[in-house]
Length: 215
Image (cartoon, rainbow, N blue to C red; front, side):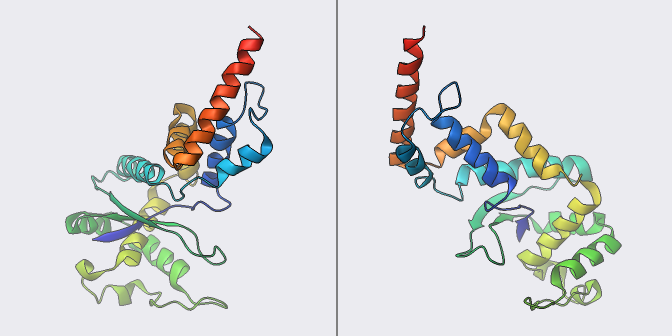
């Protein structure tokens, strides 16, 4: 079964900020100044293929570890795809993963139904500028067999369990760990196209040449 994974997206988010930081570090010298011209440095930004497959796969893997540790479940989330909107006016990037029917059943059994009902109301109640295509009632949802729920419905179970068991800062904590172990930098570099990687090599060469002058 398909599900969404909680994710704040790549636009004006903690992920966006960390990607910018990683790109800055790739083109900066030891003093924090650009090792190459500002024009070339700015060009590197245009060579990042976002959303980055490596970055989002790692995010799903780390989410799975944290989710299972906090909920006591043993759910497997297999990364499927990332969907990015054409415009970020009303929505942001979404990560999709595949999960087994038995795991969905286990998550539904574990979730506090009052929490799930609240999350359904929060996500699917229509308001000015938003018309929900789903009823906002858990009772109504339960008239449909669980194995027929779609990705938005299964993702709502996941969201409810996150709300029930995980710290509100869980996503930021994951990114902090990544910053410490260099995973963000590696993922961003892997997300560069060939020209972007060439520009990073130029920056690295210029950085090393400058450092040799002061030895």
